Length: 204
Image (tube, rainbow, N blue to C red; front, side, top):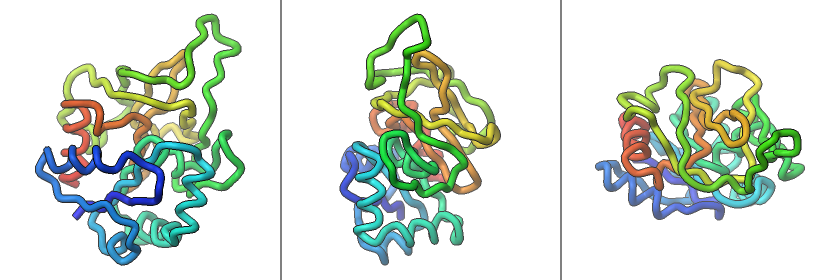
């Protein structure tokens, strides 16, 4: 059973529909016992960093998430804001992140580049794979995914970076540290590329 964590910040239904489409079984819940019993977890998210962190604390999910990810080594996938919450901090807010990955969340700043870009970054973009990972097993050639974000993740340890994308400059768009995975893009909106990624996560 894959648990899609409901902490009040996410497009949960589309993720569940995609998992169902590829033959997986998932449940959307904020129930702590169900989260604790999960074989795999997905931490989705849209919205503000501080709101996401506050909701995890207010709903009592923060501690059980740390237990599952750090002690139990349960596979967990962060999507968009969910990925950013796994970093140490964000320029969007003042609260501390989960800090599972040695990384910070930065705001796009195009002041010093010749070609200015719109914020948010919204639409399809190709990614560059930086290392092998089960998350990208048998991925289609020239993988591209759908992005919607105004902030991006900067990993401090290069070995954690799974993939990068370009929007004015190259930035980290996927990471992994052991059982902890994060993607800035939306696999549930990325057609065959997202289906293959979620198939790989379901098969872990």
